[in-house]
Image 1 (tube, rainbow, N blue to C red):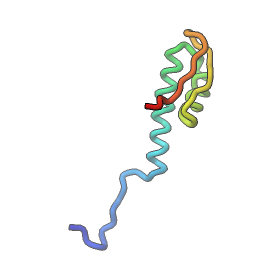
Image 2: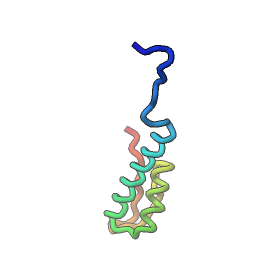
Image 3: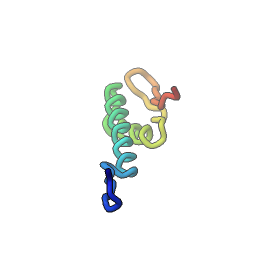
Image 4: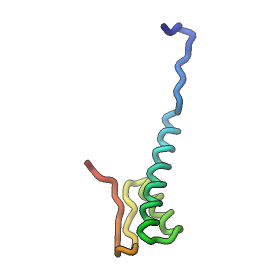
Length: 73
């Protein structure tokens, strides 16, 4: 039983949770875009767009013009 003086502590603040999910999305997108044969600078730019907006924008890869988007299922 919790007393009134006991404070509940969270393991992570909401902003920390948001940052970690953005970082996970960025890392996933960066690795995916690099695996498609894009340069590191271009991959970093498009991974940033993907993490923030849910779409990488169009970029040229070894498979031609490609776009990563968050699935809507």
